[in-house]
Image (cartoon, rainbow, N blue to C red; front, side, top):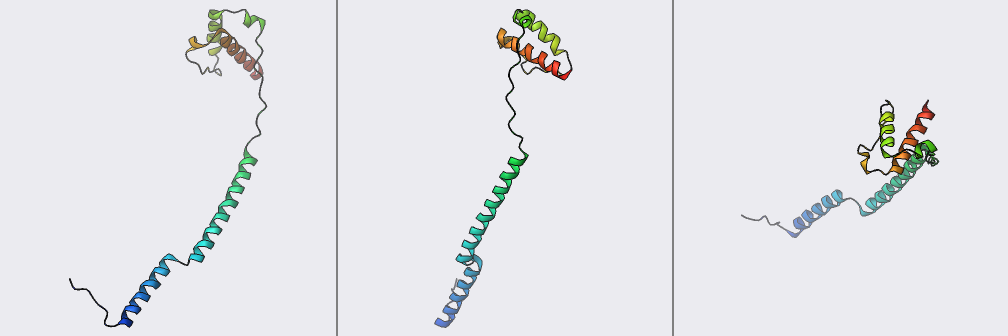
Length: 126
């Protein structure tokens, strides 16, 4: 394979200039790239600031923590079996769903609190 050699130094210089011009056109001016980078960062910062403001505006304030329902004396007197039976009756209501499918892991105090919460919720919905 035969390499093409320029006939004169001026041809070589012209070819080199052409290549350098093409590379410069493709890569862009470093000053332009720096300005574009600064502009892009500025735009991104403004967008992030506006998004944060919109998020704050549309995010509801933290709800006031609700106190646990009071456990009545009646519920305190129930044993485990009675609590489970009462929960089964409460579970029959169409608007009651209990996340715990296996109640065997809950203590009697947990069951009492669960009954009290469901009954308190039913009273507020009625």
